[in-house]
Image 1 (cartoon, rainbow, N blue to C red):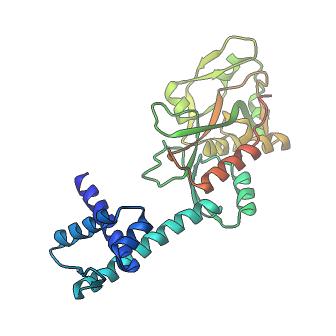
Image 2: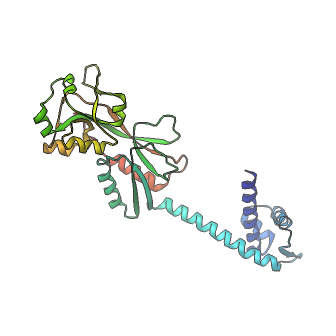
Image 3: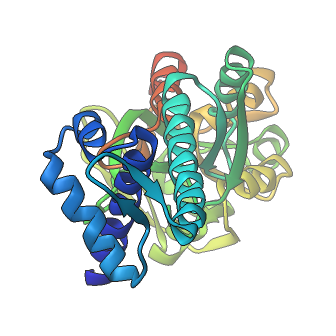
Length: 304
């Protein structure tokens, strides 16, 4: 911490030295910096003492650079110019929606990607790097701007924005139901092959809900365990058994009849969809605009 302070003070003193040389006097520099003349003179004197060299020739009428001072001044002026350029770059980033957005989405991101595609059409200076993963979020290691996740994160310093709720439904392929029959009671699921997400498989049971009725939990042994909702969907489409999937993920297949909903009065978990980000104080403009756009345009299917 002490080293950081010393570095900050040195940089500040170098900028004051540049101001003195460019103004041609301690008085002129002091007026531009909003400091007293004596304070500016003291800072430059301390800088010379720290460096062990004389930077300025002083007379009662004028200041002039020594040979070493002239070389030092050029380096200091370059540093000051780079600092100004860095500040201008940062301000420009906050004044226009541009740059790269690194976004983490679940492997089954069908609901999100059409809206993200519409966003980049509207903001042509934005580029997207999409990271698809169902693994836990690590914003720093993955250098993420925004991550979409299901449900709030426990004991997390990340800021969260709720977007809506996904409803899980029970479904199977048309061919599978034609072969094995349509269940009419929750208990009938024990006679079918369960294609389970690995998280549900570890619990060894499915949980279903019906409006106005107690929650039902049914112990089942999975026939297939899938690591993501996307792979689970493919197994169900290929007739491996029934699965519990977000309705948004299978909406097209249900509409076409490729998949059929089973026990339509029941649904699985209600999954809150959240966007999380790590910026605590100043949120970059590109992130704020992206989140506002997603909030305005992302639509979630109703529970039924």
